Length: 303
Image 1 (tube, one colour):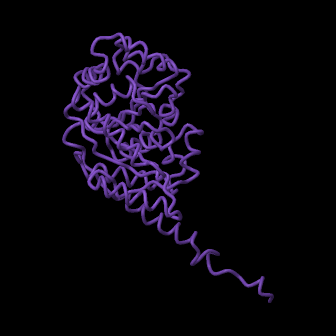
Image 2 (cartoon, one colour; image 1 turned 90 degrees about the horizontal axis):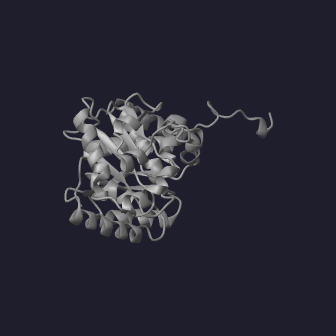
């Protein structure tokens, strides 16, 4: 028998990096499936924000929402980005909807009237956005108490609904305009996804200034509770240095879970899915599920 004809070990990949990854992912999925989390004592409202685009903000919002919904939590996602990417990822065609978050903010339409059930989970609903929301910045500018529009709408919804959510995730545009100010005024917590790259802390510091400004002006109960490192590549020294740097400056807020850079995470929205339903066994999906469990168990970390 020629050397090239020698049969591979059983399974063909035993001892290979691929086999090790599959084995490790199987172990992690088993732990996730068996993990239990309790409903929070009171509603947790997260604004998912970063003034820099392309850091995994929307991907983070929708995947954490799906992961918590899978664990039995009642979850609501409010899409405040005119691009409507969160709506799309949750299986809602924002081009075909008759009502959106714009109608709530500008025309006082109750949240319940524009809410959609997401096919991603029976425990998950979404208030969608479309390009009409791009007009909201101008329309809100002349309104009294314009920064409280979303907060008041959420409060009205909570008072009228018996089946209250356990978590609300508000996905913001990558800017500090009226939409993001509304989100920060309505939230109890801020979750900041940070890409592992140069100037990560600089952008975080700028956003921290904005959060402190909102705390002083309209929402004293707001907490920068959670920082999630995204798009991590373990093979680069820069990525590892950024992780260490962020954890040094924000030790209590930074999650242990890190989201890896992976093609499936970027592909999933194109299919109108989150990565958890698109490729549940992938590193990206597993990491987001682990992050959701960590957030639920960790509770609020003030900063």
